[in-house]
Image (tube, rainbow, N blue to C red; front, side, top):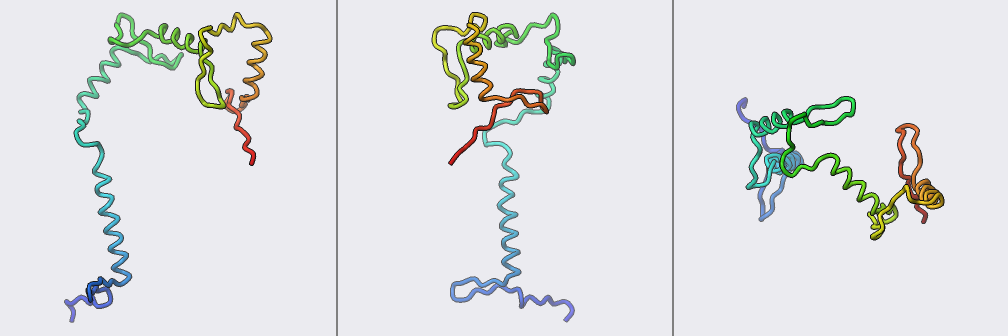
Length: 163
């Protein structure tokens, strides 16, 4: 007959408590199962209870930032516009640099242990170091770093692992 669909080769049968499926049905079942499992992942964008930021809030924050700062192409950084006071809690650039310099004077990075080591109470003053101390630090640095001509930067040497 023309209107009937022959389902005999691809039928699922349920006999004696077991489900028997033909191969084409197994592939279809696996595809549907995989599709159904990804639906939950694709709809879970944010954890429950969090509020997404509206486009209006983003636009206001963007406009406020552009009112306060301008891009300096020569230095490739954002510069605060003249006559604008920074928001509360934002440190000046000079104070951040002073804190950085103070930290670098008082600490040294240990490449072997991958952590910063305090030099103790005595701050590190490079100008007060002897030539031998500077030479010793330079040799130690050259042992762990090499100049890369392609990037024109000092790169850390890859350690050689031996069995």
